[in-house]
Length: 62
Image (tube, rainbow, N blue to C red):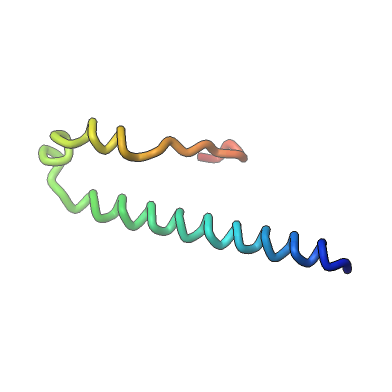
């Protein structure tokens, strides 16, 4: 296997692990938000929507 192929595999694995960490952090943040009463969350819903970037699904499952 060439050096370039090995490097591409390492980069792909690193990107996969980084995405998994981002997903886990996102899920944790959502769990933390669910701890607050809905009436308090409603007051800041607009600000939350403005600060959370929209995620595009490349496989159409999200």
